[in-house]
Length: 195
Image (cartoon, rainbow, N blue to C red; front, side, top):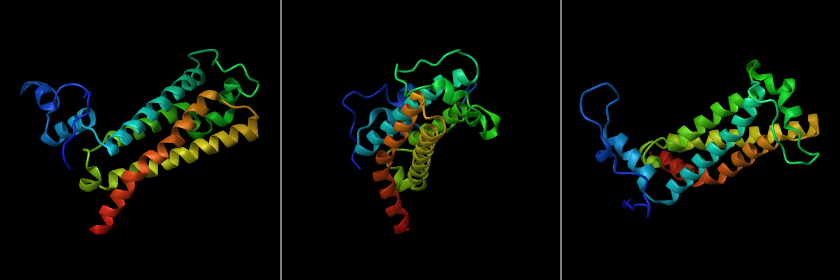
């Protein structure tokens, strides 16, 4: 695949940003520098989709951060749109929100979206050829997250008859990730079937 740079790449080439040899810290490698350059500097439809997944993961994690602050007692209130339909405090203070591992579910959501973010950024631009399992794992994770978000939304509707708008942001972001991962997952599956 021909290298196409973004019209406005992020930062210098990885080789130019390389630290001094010796000293304390991690070592670099050509594959690591390739991933750095691919994610920050190169253009392409699949990379754009991975960037969208990364952005949506950050959005969802940010929304969960607000809920986690409330669930951990760091803030006293969660602001909501002034509609009767929304009541994050009721939804997120419920026992159901602490039932898995007896911990705030938003904290688990942050960890989950962090894993999705890492999977979106893992590997070079043609990872569907080099490591086809990565796009398939990402696709599975994204579908799992979307189903989880839909389940929790249904739980809010049926048990609380109210919604947490912060949680809805995360759920919508999760569902929006699904079409972003499908093209790369298809290419990866074809690659695996050829082997």
